[in-house]
Image (cartoon, rainbow, N blue to C red; front, top):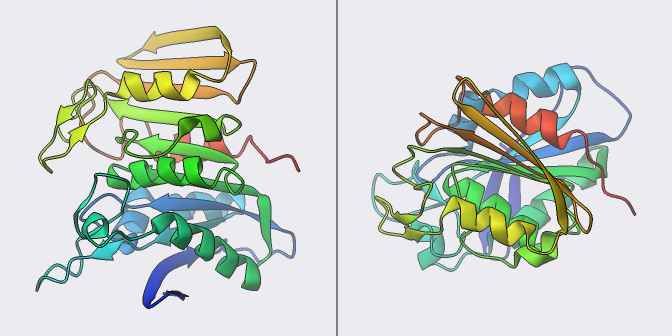
Length: 260
């Protein structure tokens, strides 16, 4: 596991490079694990690395902050605002970590900085959104799965294409908001989407509802495209059926490239 030194801490991330070697600059998908998870488990569970081998891009799986309590080494979190755990208590600046990780990867690998994407699950989804808000200069697209806005000025990410995937029966990060098992009072998903759309000049909305999955595409005249995928029977998970979150995340993100 490559190690990135950050201030007085050693921050870690897994970097998966596509199986076929290439001299051309490669896109990078950052995948932030959920709260109480790890980079390794998220790589294994999402199987994004297999898509990277097929499509020819790199995947970075950053590692969150662990509690110092005995036995908590594999239960890591991100400072996404109010959520979650040790990362919030220690006031860890994970946006700086993500930015430093990108620089670290670019120093040793052929990175296409115009195609850096960020995605996450749950607490990791909140962190992905916070990073997009705080460093929109580094992000070409943002994908949130089972998370909501916890911190960050969404006006700043006006030009970043955004995909939000969420189960309507999620009891951890409730679709309509409220206190979850972590004790955090989460913002409703519709309110998060409204805040993101507020400065984008939305003029058309295409809605399709098929087999228990509602897909909405917002075309925006003053900002980048926003898509939502809401699963009627979906709970708190990285979806596989009826939606593959891994496929959805990459299929959405790869269409976009930052313009200099």
